[in-house]
Image (cartoon, rainbow, N blue to C red; front, side, top):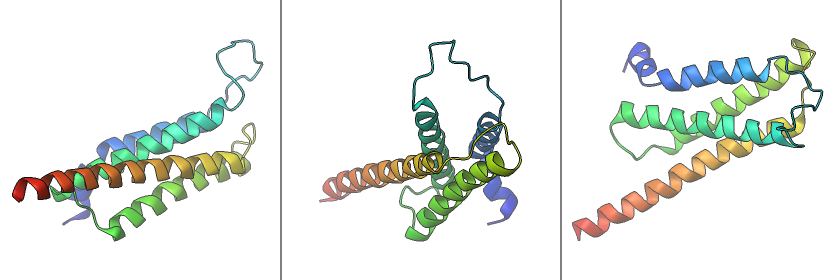
Length: 137
């Protein structure tokens, strides 16, 4: 399959990656006057961003292959890619957008979001496979 055709199925994940890069490097005022943000809100946002990114990548791969069963290699690549993007965001915050602070806990939450997405896929795929096998027999 051509690279261009594979990208067609990843439109949403590419768009979401751009959203992550913009929002994680945006300069927000941190005066605490809004009352909406609580301590740890940033970590929750990182977890959610990368959970959604992982789900979108898995969805695009399933649509590309027209099969819900993805190989271990594909899951590893998606895990590596999303973790690499998370590390890239932290490096950008550390070296380029110095008004933001790089944080190991942000990267940890990025990886937890990735893990949650992979776990959700594995669980749902396992349930789907169980239903398929019980319908056959």
